[in-house]
Amino acid sequence: MDEITKLMVDQLKDAHSAERQALRAMQRMMKNATNEKLKQGFEMHIEQTQGQVERLEQALEQLGAKAGRKVCEAMRGLVEEGQHEMEENDKGAKMDVVIIASAQRIEHYEISAYGTMATLAKSAGMRELGDLLGQTLDEEKRMDAELTRLAESEVNKAFIEEARAEMEEGANENKRGASRKKAS
Image 1 (cartoon, one colour):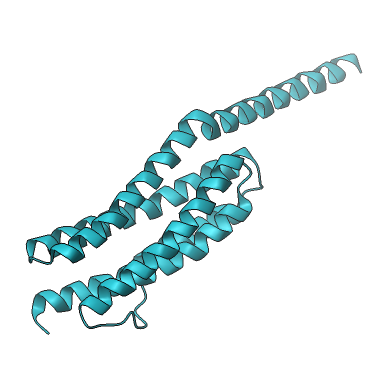
Image 2 (cartoon, rainbow, N blue to C red):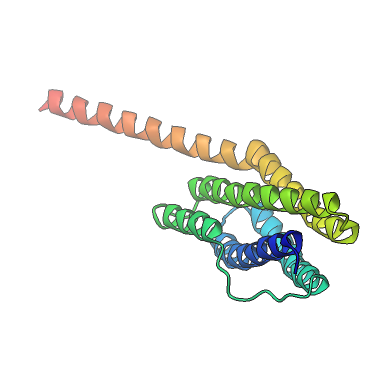
């Protein structure tokens, strides 16, 4: 196996591990999300990701390799960070913001990985492989854009309104407490 193929196989194995970890993380995110459009987006991307895993296995077969037991440590860290953030928050608008932030970190990592692999494959004359990886790259970019759109149009606004209402309620409670002290 030449050096180019060895590097591609290593990168593909890493991506395979990353996608499998991301798949489990998205299932947890979908379970914890409260925004219906966010849940639906995860449901759709989970199906896409299953196809992406199959594409990676197909790509590895083209190069005469199998996925193996390689663990993508970068994705492990991103998933763990997202899990910790979800554990620190209750369900609701804030949780949805946390979920989108975590999901976009994962998407950005995947965009970087697929962009690099697709470019390398095409540069090495592996056009079919490059196109296969480019298809996944496009899906990851679309998911990232959809998460941004949803954050800007609904999720962030809902959280900010909720947080401001809680702040206002706390301020009013402090005023009532001060008034009671004066009265006594």
